Structures are given as structure tokens and as C-alpha cells.
Length: 241
Image (tube, rainbow, N blue to C red; front, side, top):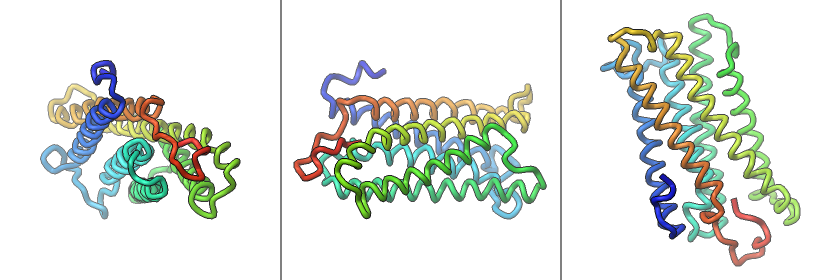
């Protein structure tokens, strides 16, 4: 798929980004349908079924918003770097807010149903992802926005910042996919039951589109041809994300 987009980096980036956005939006639409009244009796209801908001908020926040946030430096190459930094930080706040809401939804759901917390591999990945996310955001804000550390520290920290950004994104993807698979298994979605066929197909195609979105994001981040060129400022020695 990546070979057919051509040799012009800007053009190929735009094509792959558009494909990624389509896959990401399809993931959101599908997970949103999972608790729609047309396919499920367990509809969206914060009081009686708070779990219904958990996969949707995690998908929008930790998959789509986070994936776009870590691509901003490459997506908006012509915008001044300081503005992109602010957009990057704000996008991540939105992502974290939605992720926190999703975490609150599953905690409330388990309190209502009197089930134990953090007893599965999925839950451990999820809570670790949120924790790493918060720590990464704080370190990035202090290093690059305010109070803004020295040039040498910023330059030395950038490779670590980029690496953990990818790790957190992949951890989010793993948490989302294992979570919905776990929910499908415990809800008998994957049995030979025609009543659950629509929800089973939703989860399967959600997994496909989520995987494609994450693969494109990681590819765009890993290809140096798409990296933002150095700015002609006093920060020209600091590598761009």
C-alpha cells in the first residue's frame, strides 16, 4: 500500500494521512454503533450502563485524538513551531480528558455491578497507558513549553520523548483491541448466534480499521522523509518530532 503513493513526500504523506483519517473515523463510527439501540438492547445510559461510554471514549481519545496529536508536527509543517507545540499539547489534553472519562465509565460500571477492578490483562495495559500518558505530557510540557529547559536537555530528551510517544500510542491500541475482544468473548458475541451477528461484525471490522489506522500512524512517524524540516530559529539544533 505504501509503495503506490509516489515519490513526492508531501503528496504521499497527504494520501496516507487521508487514508488513516478515514480508517480512524470508521473505527469511531463502528464502536459508536456497538451500543446503538438498533443493534443492542444495552444502549447508552450513564446511570444504568456507564460501560457503554468506555470503548467510545477510549477510541476517540486514546486512538484517534492521540494518533493525530503525535502527527501534528508532520501534518502542519508550514505553521510556526510554537503554534504547533501549543496545538500538540492541547490535542493531548483533549485525548487525556476523553481517556479519563472512559476510565471513569468502566470504574462506575464495575461499582454498579459489584465486580472487582483491574483483574485482567486489558485493564493493566489501560491503567499503565493512562499513567504513562500523564507522565509523558508533564515531561514534554516542562521541557518544551514552560518553563522550557536548556537546549542541551531538550535536544537530548527528544529521542526519548518520541519513543515513548509511539509506545503509549501502541499501548493504547493494544488496550482498545484486547478490551473489545474481551468484551465480545464475555458477551457471547463470538458464538454461533445470529442475534449477535451484527455486533460480532462490528467488533471484527472495528479491529481491522483500528489496526490499519495505527499502522499508518506509526509508518508516518517512522519515515524520516515526512519529518518537519528544521526551523530557522534558535531551536534549529533541537530535532523535530
